[in-house]
Image 1 (tube, rainbow, N blue to C red):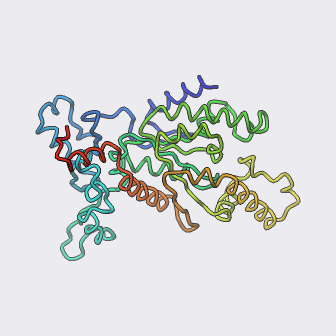
Image 2 (image 1 turned 180 degrees about the horizontal axis):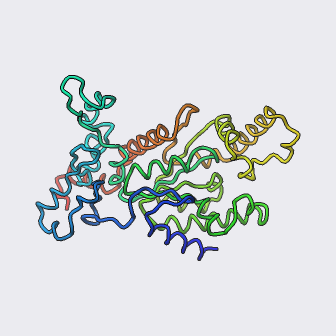
Image 3 (image 1 turned 120 degrees about the vertical axis):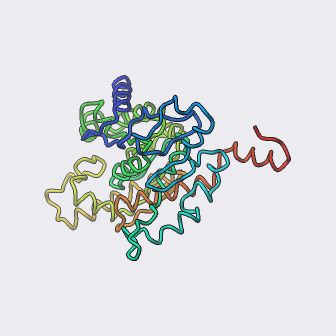
Length: 337
């Protein structure tokens, strides 16, 4: 199945359009960048200059001034700014924090002026990640697909992929049917093949299957990016699945005697199954770089906000090794090139 997976993935990543099966961010992966170390956040495509207009240092610096969301911003991919939380992390930048006081008003009631817009923190996350993938892990029904798609769209330069959807498209069948015809072990092998193909690409937000953490070999691929665990209580997941059509599509949760069960008994049985699965996988899930607790009142965008903020904070607390080496060299009076 691996050749089909690889071909399908290449076709999808070279097509910036959305389909009913795959939810991509609006932008194409084939986008203009200034250099290998510089990521543009400029989301107004028609203002992108050609390579010819970037031939001088002045032009390059002017191009690094961004107007994301209407807010003039110095590209934090500048080496000294990228890892300075007070500049690159919008939650810790005083100028951005101060300007949020008017964000609820469309215009100033007295002057009639439109207030300064605040750049979406998701757009400032992409250059800090330097192309590093984001892997969302967690139980089925935790919202990995919906939240991952929302994050990728807001980042602008990242695309979203769902490993289960890729597997279904490549196999030409559903996950449930794969379990029935081939068994869980064969499904896990195919799932690992999808992860092998996906992890070779960059600038992706990837929603994974709930059990992808089970196989130790998958972690060698997950660790090439940042892993985010969406932690949701069993009763919240059960409510989501029962309100939709999610239980029948998930073979590990299917109740064979559902015809003779009342709705309350069905919910109790589902919660018990979810509790057992979470308990079995907890140590795996909690190996994630970032853990975000999802409450019942949190919608897709609120959850996406929590993930984005947690990733900014994680980057602040875990700067790249070269940054630590540079700081040490400078403290010892050594010129850093």
